[in-house]
Length: 161
Image (cartoon, rainbow, N blue to C red; front, side, top):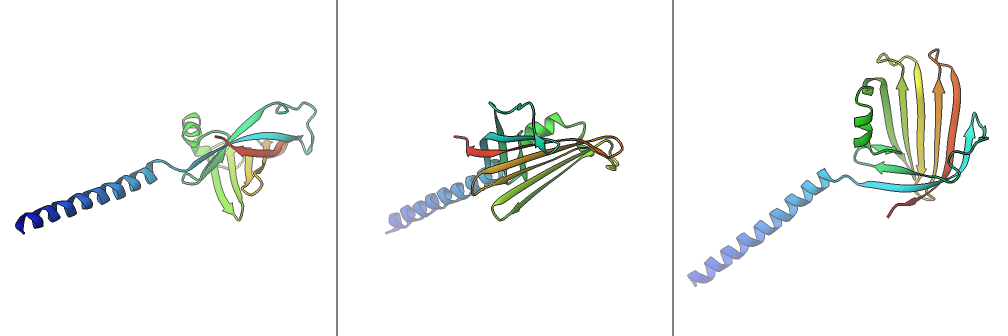
């Protein structure tokens, strides 16, 4: 009888260790691996200053979009790579991430200075999760905060496999 209690106790201990290990590694994995969705997007329309672009730069190209809910990110570059590229400009930049119904909105604003008074570049990335359509308008400004050029890409995306 005593041997049975020892085996039963050891079995319960082993089961407890397995459950603890599973829960612990699940929590670690959830925190370390954010949900990153990569899209291959085909451009169907290119606009410059709200008119069809004369030279279609993306007619035969695809762009990739990276959607990362955990890092509140939707852009054509991964957030970790973007942070490296923009490390010296971060104080001049504001970003915003909003999810509303089936759409995800990401906005980026880069200013000429840390005071954030005059815009240099502004863009938005919008993707609709139902039909995977996207819009990517960009606005370029002068130092006097006057819009001097705009461009927009419009198209559809597929999940990258």
